Length: 295
Ligand code: OGA
Ligand code: MN
Image 1 (cartoon, rainbow, N blue to C red):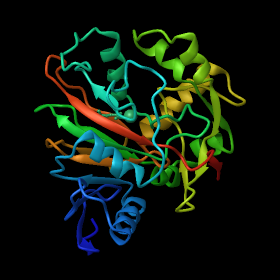
Image 2 (image 1 turned 90 degrees about the horizontal axis):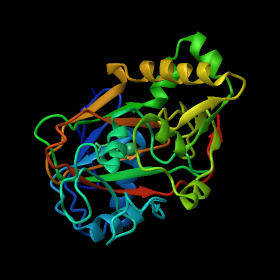
Image 3 (image 1 turned 90 degrees about the vertical axis):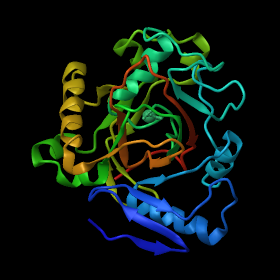
């Protein structure tokens, strides 16, 4: 693994050969100087996932940090959005009033779908650039977040899979979630807000120029030129390959960790945890810089 190094007073410690670095020497409650912001951005492009320990920030401070990277998404469903801060996406089994929800509550079922590999908001015409997740109440056991490097996955694909990916497009449909778990049905407005989109399976990163495999299995129900059941099976096969340990960093949370990831070149999932225990994470989601570019 790459040795720890310093940039602009930040101590950057790689966490896995494939991706992930811990960054110390930063207080995200304060505005970053342009030089420090550039160092953080460079580290993000180099490591894909950054972990900032011990960040006791308010939602407003979290939002201010996230806004340095771009505009923030507002989720199209009210059940997930904070009533106080519409740019906060509540990744939680605790409701907006702080009450633990029953394990079979539709919102909990939806949040549980994050236990499957995905990348955030791939179902938007302009999918998210990256997400920033603040661990407020973490679980002692389970609830670890795994990240996989989709540049490395694309580079390592066996010829048979790479040829089949080719320059095909894959469909991403938010509503596909309703076929996977007993979640709240979409309202007509929610459905109209997020019609299915077709995205290239091999995408080029707008900053690094690198090619990666772009799939998000919880939303993918069709591939150009394949029957739907073959498409879903193929996405499953690609996902299994992407989940190989050599590509994956698994993050064990400490309270007040802030973790940010690049949705353009990674996938993530959370490991199962006891739903009778509170888990409260607040996420901001940075709007993408433009439509997905095919590689
Ligand atoms: C997310 C997500 C995983 C987790 O915030 O986008 O998928 O660990 N969360 O809660
Ligand atoms: Mn997610």
